[in-house]
Image 1 (cartoon, rainbow, N blue to C red):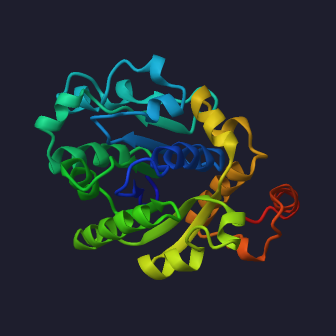
Image 2 (image 1 turned 45 degrees about the vertical axis):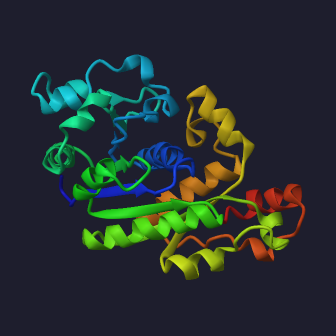
Length: 271
């Protein structure tokens, strides 16, 4: 590549906070902005990235066959039909967990780096070998969490481990933000989370039922419903990754009506 490939680990510690959904939608957003992007499913035990991208029926080879030299990298990559700048490298058989080493993940990422501008690694939950393998191949990281005590505690543990790997920058995405609950002090505020984790905020994603709808359909929200609040959040996170100065929504300054809030968001395009 003409410029150095950005290899970004998308992790959280706690499962179910939205890592894979962010990976899929961020990948689509970067690809739509003209950047060749690879998404690597590093969750060999419970792969789901192919489902969220609607590519599960097109997988022939996986990272396993690439490492075993039973196929070429280009044969294993699954290019998205609607967004050709995006390719998926699927996770292999769960038995890979028995023998996969950090060096193997580094080899895969090095091969991808020769072809793409961005490599997004969808990290498995937890801090065991799957996390360690994925982190060993990463240059920077996005920590995804929800404004909930248990999720933030797990994220804090992950951040400490990322620091030991020398990964930087490490940035924060706060997912499933509910402005009304924050206003009523029924969930942690953005400032609370930032203070606890001591990370710069790359973006937040508003709670949006269309995320569930798009996930079940295997159609990333940034591809199928770009006008939804969450889709615009994902798109703006992709822009901020590239250094673009896009303000982040402050839920505390918004009204309590979600309908009015979303209408203003559509008008200002600030997320």
